[in-house]
Length: 319
Image 1 (cartoon, rainbow, N blue to C red):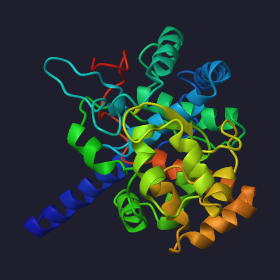
Image 2: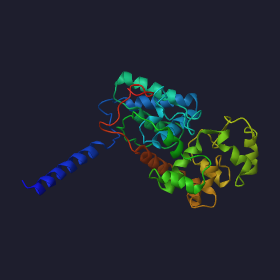
Image 3: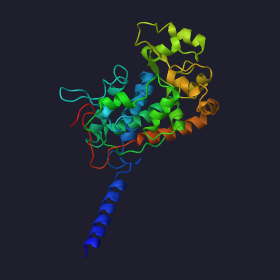
Image 4: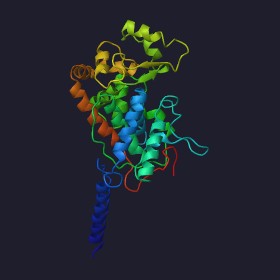
């Protein structure tokens, strides 16, 4: 065999190997059908129980998935606790004293480790719990591709830089989502997650005292629970009309200049996304479909598959 033919043969073999890896790395909604057939039912029952105890937990579990996927991909890096020799993402500015739901994920993981030890990843639990939380609060459902594995690393710096801040203007929001491969339209759809949940005073204080594109009565009401100084952790609903229902009221509120965060109201402020906000405010079905599709795309952000990463026994620490 000539040197050229040998090189071509090796190149073809390499392509086949890489191709095989790519094929095997594809996530699948039926990934646990044989290895842990009760996995999805177990997660769903636990999520419904948690949401029934506290409706806000649904929004918290959804947000946990978002904050996980935007940093290193959907790899459960957000769940890792700090240790003397390891720094996780929980103390990042967007996460510290803000992210919730870790105990719900721990509980689910414990149940699954009894059912099928070492099989279901923490990353998949977070992804499915987000879906089930939305559905539990009246929102859409979608098939969650599964087969993610858990990271053995985390990135505090990426958590601080890659998660969109509540004070961003529209162009900065579009850029932050574009960095992760999302269109401006998908960014608006995903922002609709703020139709449920709450935010801390520190995140919207500047808006209710300084912004001009805000309903004055709405601002004054919020100021009653968010003073200009102090009360940083006091909470307000993103949606004051149906705070525990996953609907399109978030977009209706934006039309009335009642977006809680500066970044919320930026979606309807004379810019390129105004028409989409208006459309969603009038058509719940359109929002539901677009949100579900965007969530599937988000769940596909750089997952670890195959032999990469691990299946953590305890979601809070590397095996």
